[in-house]
Length: 255
Ligand code: PGA
Image (cartoon, rainbow, N blue to C red):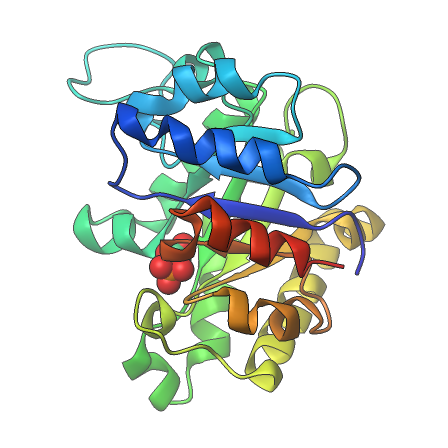
């Protein structure tokens, strides 16, 4: 494990104001000195959650951002607005956005650059489909997503901190998201080793500390084994992050 683990919850399009109780429970149960804890509620809750979580071990993030800082983009939210609302991280390139909104690697790279411009960390998601895995193309697909979704080499990672403070990469096989099917430890280890080495060729030794998260049906019952896998520095948790009790169990399984 390279760095302090990062356990991130992605609430997706779930959560009304009444969900504040789950944040309260998460804050109440968050272990001091444990892994870094991040909760990414829907955009409507970012400001209220960030205000409540300020000064606690729980950081608040967002699930998407627009590449531009401001302008005529109805319905979109910029990274600067998220930072202004108190977000610290933003997820970019989630497979649901790639599928539902046709997001390309180039757009994801622009969003990650926007996150850095605004001083946010970016959680960059990559992952192959079932058809791609069955065709033996998982490694090639994920490698190409990673290189295409990282901003150009001239792009800095924003002000302050090294790359590890600004970038985490989440390997989320599409076939494991919300399906109850989890990649095997060997599959995860192989993919994460590849991601580490690709990041090393881009960022040098600083890549050692970039957190590589696994995501896809992470639950209290499997988190311990997943988090003990080589080159796994945390998890991106969807469904099991909605209830604080489950999310806290996953957090307590982190080394
Ligand atoms: P899941 O979602 O944990 O519900 O499978 C993970 C994700 O999509 O980030």
